[in-house]
Image 1 (cartoon, rainbow, N blue to C red):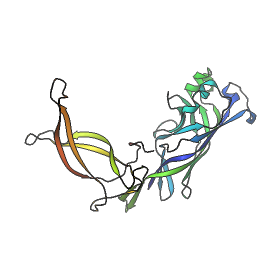
Image 2 (tube, rainbow, N blue to C red):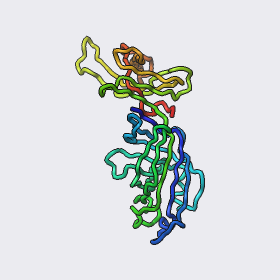
Image 3 (cartoon, rainbow, N blue to C red):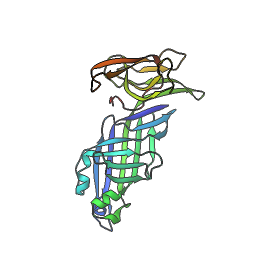
Image 4 (spheres, rainbow, N blue to C red):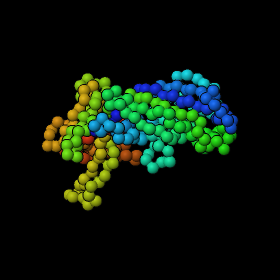
Length: 277
């Protein structure tokens, strides 16, 4: 199973400008085409199993406009902040086009089909329908056109893997974290500490057990293997716990209050915690 993110690509909007301006009847002659480049390494993730597309995961692709068109002012002002967002499952629309700065949704998207070419690592969306959102209709002072189809969006993206997991009899036996960093060699670092918890509410000998979750990243240029125990070809992570203490504002000294044995890491990072992408 692979998880892949957008490396680069192109997108195109074909918009019925007359319909956006309130016309009841329109034609192909009124279509305006806006072309975009996809921002390199956008963190829009798809899941591929045995070279077959399974699903895209929630995320967003930034659009970089490549040409101009005679668009409504509200839309033209947001072209440089446009993102295509894959929503969480259960939302009314799976995809939307919105402004990444003020979060205004311009178009809800329906009728999309996802296609993946494993040989080319190419992900495609063709001629998905653009529906005017209520927010955009209000900005146009035309609330009646909310939900109207005013064009299509198409996209072709080249994908790159960020996690490769091998399964044997349904059990994950190996993770590979492809290199996307710049440090020569394999170089695993802890990118984030999460979910600190006290494992036992009762102290033992004046001590309590604390655990901290870790998210790891590969800052290197060589892929990392993550073989599960009992193999030892995987990172190990030690943890120490410190606190500021003393004085009126608890900043007088730095105290070590805990030390761990090593954590045997398994399962590679699938988010962009370290900002490599």
